[in-house]
Image (cartoon, rainbow, N blue to C red; front, side):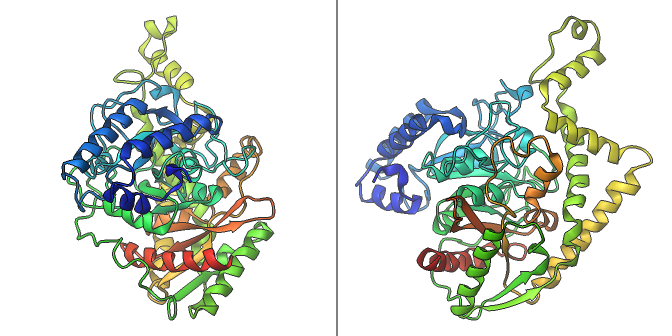
Length: 486
């Protein structure tokens, strides 16, 4: 077995025993990236800096400078291209930032470097994280490793494909309405969105500031608990970062018995039009949990039906405000047409017309409309009130249940080009993931096997705010059940 196919916690054991070097692991990953270029998982592959960092880490292992506090020393990690990495291109999958070089590191990048992780490259994504298929990227679509004729999900499709296809050991993404969990489900890996405020957003290029959250992609739950140990924590540079003790998520994994765990099944997540095979597979997982002694009970989250509509008022409104900074003046693409040179307003217009893709323009228009004079109260303010009701539904549910279990996506991966011209159908791809972002709670997607066509299916678990440790423990227990019996 190639080194790129091992999990991070396994490789850390091999490194500690000097059975492999970080350079060998990194070279194995780089070789896989080269062999599988057609997947288009990466926008930038950082070959030279990654090999240099690996060599430095190997020397630190040799001289005893690496110890247990360096949790991912020598492990290659892929980073979504909307997370700033100093002196390395960060494009957000957009023409308007095609040549942008950030002068600072995101909080999570500094954490990775402190733990001696190896940043292998910046991954492909829907432009400014707006999409559910990684088809809106200026750099072309990413392909699903399970079936290259299908989409990998989005917007973090590059990171999901990289981890699922052994082109990275670990991956980082961002989740605004399901952009980690949905591609994890469609590619067949683990994807987790932490509680809003647990992981700093400093250095994450903003889409919708009250919804965006950095999270991870891994091949199993143990790796996810390890990665969360690295990236979680308070950051004074982020006003939304919560200052509270961070538990050791890795310790205790595997020690929880599923017997007696109370699991709620929201009836609103089993809707008409949902793929039949996905419904059957999730029902099979529920029966297995019951057999293992979990207490399963149907419940209701009554305001779920408004979640998609609510999200597509709040998210575009915040996006229209955040993306106003891209005007061709300070950084990024600037229109060089003759009329732009002679007229400032025309330069703004041409820069944004040429620099943004159709989906970004659509959301800016929607958001600007809902924030405009005369419509703010009717749309944005009302949407915030509905968001509060959605959050209260979850608060009520978690007084009774340890976790909630749902499908991650209503369909398996669809064909490339199938929905790109039908925005409403595309938006419904996130129908089961959006509510967790609206409520600010953690959610995780776990592989639940494949359908009859060999396409991955994901099961989603959700927990109360800052209950990641419990969520990971239950997820690990479920993972073992699925691994053995699904």
